[in-house]
Length: 72
Image (cartoon, rainbow, N blue to C red; front, side, top):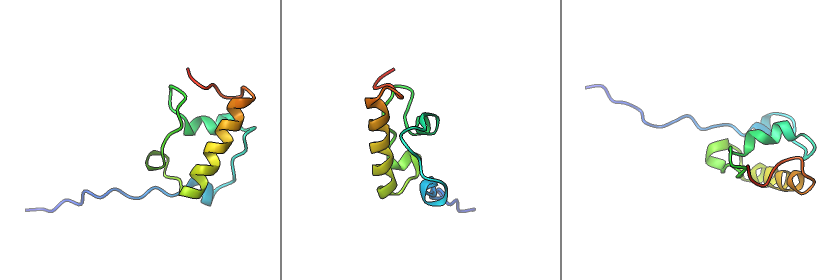
């Protein structure tokens, strides 16, 4: 009987490997919110804790100056 490995490959933090995201870059920040406007959790985005906090702050700043919606 064949054994199956049910573990999924861990996602790599896009911020650690790529360029940092700024609050002015609304198109990139849209990847980190769902269709209702909620911030996606770390387990979905694959970010490390440090960068998830950073992205959350950037999304909140973009919302405050109306680049991103609070709700849809």
